[in-house]
Length: 238
Image (cartoon, rainbow, N blue to C red):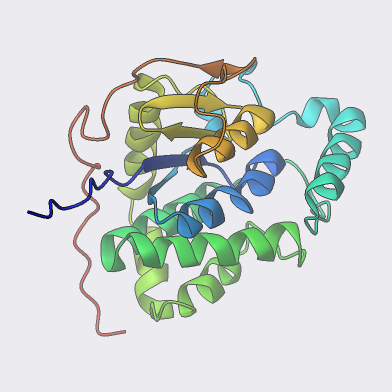
């Protein structure tokens, strides 16, 4: 009798990001692609990194601008990633994060991923104004979200509360900065550890230590602390 071959469960990866952080941009060019190539289940979590501690690994370091941009440029060159410094920094990324949450509630995780990819490119490659609502609107058009619906959603007074709750939930799971990625419950934080996690996603380096800047161990399942904070049910004709 022929027995069915053993099938491994798909890897579950959670990527925590904030459009404010240039290192999160660099990580965003790698982690989603790695997950797609190995057919891993990827969950994107848009979080407000300013809600975390100031000394969070990999967090925004605008006060160290003389160090920050040369370091980011070197990392981008090493990774072969296009990069340009925004016209103004730091900027308020909350509107962009709320755009992702709105799109995820309206159209699902894949639509959110497409919007996030568009926003990363617009801000860190094309030089779009991250605080201009038109930047969010253009990204929303890519997944057929009508401008009127998106603008009305972003104007809803409940959106900042939802973003705060999502960020607080991430902090409860051990996230204290971005970029951060959880690979089957093992949390990595900071650019270099996240890039090391890419090897785990691809199935390499299973027995290696996570390295400095990571937090090992079980940080809880993705269902911990309940489902995503509910986004208001907007219904628009467009």
